[in-house]
Amino acid sequence: MNYVLQITQLLGINIILAASLNVINGYCGLFSIGHAGFFAVGAYTSAAASVLWFPGLAASHPDLALLLVVGVGALSAALAGLVIGVPCLRLTGDYLAIATVGFGEIIRIVLLNLESVGASRGFPGIPLLTGARLPLWILFFTALSLLAMHRLIRSSTGRAIISVREDEIAAQSMGIDVRFYKIFAFVLGAFFAGLAGALFAHYSQFLHPSNFTFMNSVMILLMIVVGGLGSQIGAVLGAIVVTLLPEVLRFNETLSGIRMLIFGAIMVLVVLIKPQGLMGLFHRRKKVGVTAV
Amino acid sequence: MSEFVQYLVNGFAQGSIYALIALGYTMVYGILKLINFAHGEFYMIGGFVGAFLLAKFGLPFWLVLILVMPIVGGLAVLVERIAYRPLRNAPRIAPLITAIGISIMLLEAMRLIAGAQPRAFPQPFEDVIYEVGEWIPSLDGVIVQRSQMMIFGIAIALMLVLNAIVMKTKIGRAMRALSMDFDASRLMGVAIDRVVAFTFLLGAGLAGAGGVLVGMYYNQIEPYMGQLAGLKAFTAAVLGGIGVIPGAVIGSFILSISEALVVGYSESSYRDAIAFAILIVVLMFRPWGILGKPERIKV
Image (tube, rainbow over all chains, first blue to last red; front, side):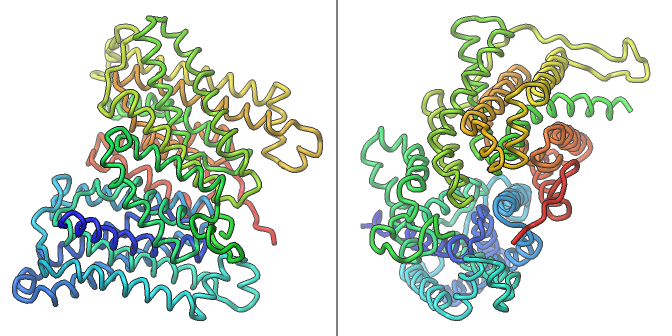
């Protein structure tokens, strides 16, 4: 039971992560592969908030403290998204992809050298805020994040974001501020990645820069590619598949050893054979997946 | 003074290796406008194939170097055929995603075959250390290893060969034509698929040679070595002007020498951040690099 509970919490965190990257890559068509960087910023700042800045509050009012540190994590990641996004989003396509990789790596290397958060030794002793109620909080935040992103994509703002993906020049000539909506989508994605990071910090109680490598960014990308870019249900499905597959494979030693090989192969095969991802299995007319971007 | 010269020497040896990798990135980008994310893995595989040939068959070093190039190049041709060619008319992020997938697969395959731990690279010969101070007294304390001179010499020789192929041969002319205008070349009867395959063969072959040389230099190889080296070589290619062959070489030496100087004079733990900082600054202010030309976006 405990094991199931652990996996479910991780699943919730991964769902938020996948959905947040989906806003950037799937809906806005910006190819970002440094998402683990924002996850890291959220995780480390929220951990710093509960360990270094407000230890008293964390001890006396854990629920309030959790809300506070999750907010701190999400906002700091959004700020990082703004700082990175404003210069980066002048780039397009693969140049943007590479720049986001660069920023993701820089964030990791800075954390690796930052003594106040443990540098290469890692950041231990993060309180399990709210204790047994944490899974419920994670569930709550997962639902809230999905709902918020869903409402946003269905609004006029969301349609503007999608129009940027469809055709930048056409969108611009219809009076849409392309640059603003790109930055908006980027910051929004970073915000929810930071929120996921804050939950992750207090769920795992220990952070290390090696949790936030390029490979972690690639795994988040894999979730939305498998699910179908530009579909929120797809992001959820992709997160479920990518999170649960290693757990299923755990029961077989050989398969468990080659799980990363399987992930790599899935990534290639989905794009080659089923670029709409899992969502392509359900509705054919709607534009989702790699071909939509 | 001698400290500074020492850093330059180390920088030039490392830069030769970056250059061998960066050339493949830049050639593929010049022709297909594709960032071959798997390219760093060819470098890693080159190191492992070289170690295998040296240890198992005891072949002489020069023969290993010559054999590794077509083996790794052939693998790259296969990858291109399976993962990139079917997506040539797909949106540009599609081959980017398959490239990342292929990169993971190659890395994992090698980790499963060889193990995740770093391995010793069999030494083809004793390294000799030359004291430069014996000849030039003002540079007392500077040392140059024979392996460093070999890396530099072999890399330059390979680049000259590459230059001759690209500038003097028929297929080289076809490569230049493709990078100028892909569709027009096809209409003019250039055998597109063959030229693209040849480009991958050349590029990955050079990266494979780089893997062998780096194994000889540091005496060590590991499955994860391709990732960071690949990203750094890509930075070098962007810095020099992606798609421009001499640019990749210039960018590589600038990058490696800046790294050597930062490691020498300040925090070595930030060494790996330099490449990314340079990358971002270049992308922000001069995305076409040192030797490239700005591209205009047309409606």
